[in-house]
Image 1 (cartoon, one colour):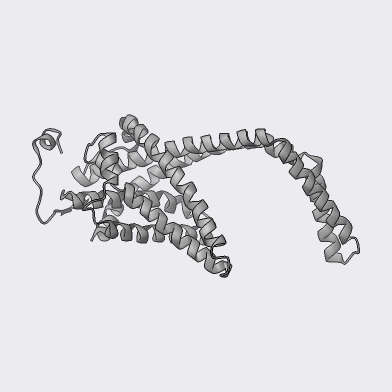
Image 2 (image 1 turned 90 degrees about the horizontal axis):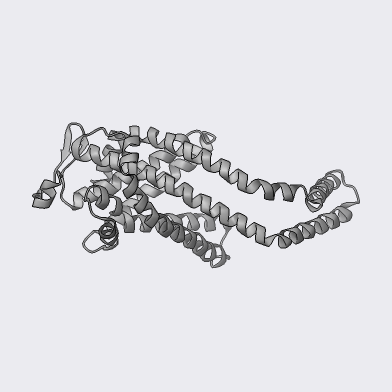
Length: 318
């Protein structure tokens, strides 16, 4: 039922997708410009070096000799080898600058994810208002109104997420491509994707209650953090299975959209992916906490035994 209710809530909040799209495009364009400014000096230094020019010339000459059957392949091969060694020497001589460039890119990536996270928090707030009160809250007003809480949440969540993602990619690379080196590459890729989706689902299961606890539960940052990682009596296997299915569907739709529409469908599928995940988080929270909620303007989902509001919840207006 959670999956079904999630779909209905997603459809009921589909307009949030377009607001997410606009917000994300703005952030991505700004980030792309900054990335370009950071990378440009390194790119110009590399492409303007003698080694790079010689390497390109050697590759072109090698391909030409190979295609037309000329006997000068050994000479062009030696040129490629010498040029490549010159490029490696250039990179080695500029290691300190390259490290600072990487640090700059990581810092920009963190800031980009931070602002993306602010957008996710605003979308979550809009979804909650619709589920609880049938209120059509403004995305951008929610963004401004929740700026403080959203900033604190993202300053906690993003570093944890980035560390988890980096460990995930590195661990799966060595596990699949090094540990299972004896199986064919297509099967390695299938195993890598399956394990990656499972690992993402585990992360989402562990953090699924964080936003709902902040927004609907009105808990403080510390209490919400402790609450989400306390997985007792939260039907973890069911939540994990739902996240695995949803993430796999999202992955499939995004890949299909990228391939069959030449990337155009990603304008809808990518922001929709974040929205539907938020919808499931709130549906899961409302169901477990035995709170009634709207899935559309005519349908209210009520728990089998509705929990009465506490005195504190009543005076908070919940």
